[in-house]
Image 1 (spheres, rainbow, N blue to C red):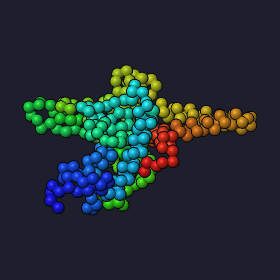
Image 2 (image 1 turned 60 degrees about the vertical axis):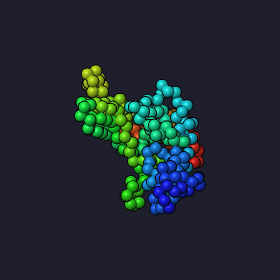
Image 3 (image 1 turned 120 degrees about the horizontal axis):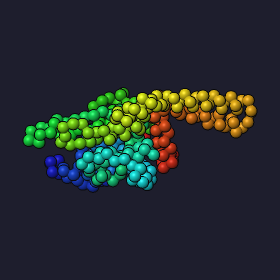
Image 4 (image 1 turned 90 degrees about the horizontal axis):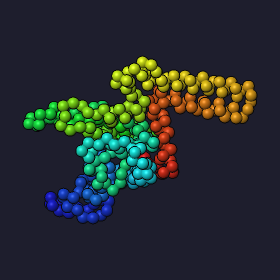
Length: 294
């Protein structure tokens, strides 16, 4: 076959030219630009087999249903956008999920969401400015969000797969780079980082007023620890009362207190991931029912 010969797309069957297709691994055929629009903007389709990419498209179709029915209806004032020159993320705390925003993602047929509990860590990144005439130290700064991912990175053996089938492991994406400023002399990611710190219960206000507040009421972690201790005493009191009275209503209150204590203690240990998982699971179960994303 010549360089400019047309090949058949492995998914739709249409004949496509060299500049309108990408080759799948293991010589399993090609995917055309239109079918590639059904895939995530954050994957390289050339790293997939035909069956893997077909499964990915099915995954993206379910993600789009989740996006349309869970994310879109949320009022704009309850979403937090961190977008720099058309690229970034938009958070929806009430469903414990966010979406990736970029010109490439906007062109896709299916939109996708990422769960907060899939975030493993996040750290700042920077790109040195090579344009001497610009005068700025960095051409771009931002945050790299690392995700728990059950798929090995390209070139790794399948034996490295962990978390397969777990909803707090993303099945395809390992990391997302979120630019927070371009052509700058300093890091400017405070808004996004602060928001993620609040999501995971590790935010501390380092301002003058925040320092005074912390000296009076304690740090965020100290306040969480006091809350768990308070819930513990409350649960013990309700248990004792229920045992003495034998009242069904008192027994129900004791049960509720124990559940609250359990949830608060789990959030303290996991940096809120326990409650984030519950929230995301409830949303997925409500929208998708018995369908599975992975």
